Image (tube, rainbow, N blue to C red; front, side, top):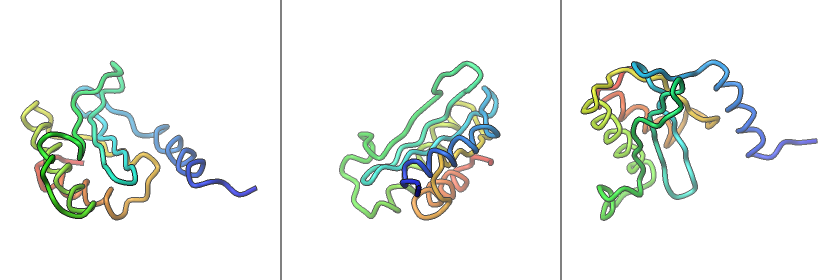
Length: 118
């Protein structure tokens, strides 16, 4: 029986999460992509807490115009700025089962340009 898109993504996500884990020094940069918005958060898996979170729904982007890919780049830049302000320079990237393409890739590239190392 064929898998649905969600089941396929969940299987890939489980496979990735067996390997990728965040610590306090190097948290996990988790990306969630919905049809309209994109969310990024830094997670410390040792203590199980979210260090910081940024999404395209934040007040910083309230009047922002542009395509979904442009919004992903803005979110990536914002998460990098907030992380560096919090003293975090290196992260582990978790694409959350999505293909490294389009909005996910744009967010990652913008975070790298913002100064995060992964």
